[in-house]
Image 1: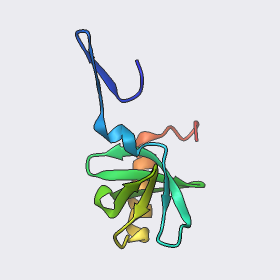
Image 2: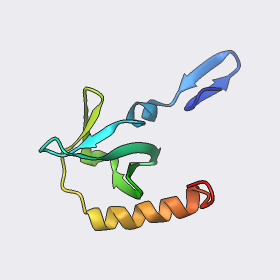
Image 3: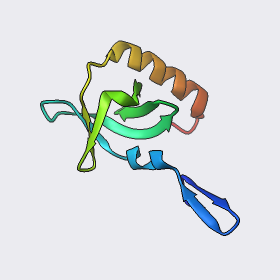
Length: 95
């Protein structure tokens, strides 16, 4: 079964949040701030090198397959939340 799809009977339903996966995140100066690797509730998980960040989804605007930052982000808080996500979700032997 494809990622983000749920099969009910003969129907296949796609998760609408899939459109946010595997996208580059850029700031107002067009600098890449990371790539999306997951969506959890109303937050998006980004990976920037070896750093994981978890940021509110409403901080972005989707335009032409790029997530553009449209609100100020507390990057220190995003790093802490990203590290907690990584510790919970990823096997340290696999990273």
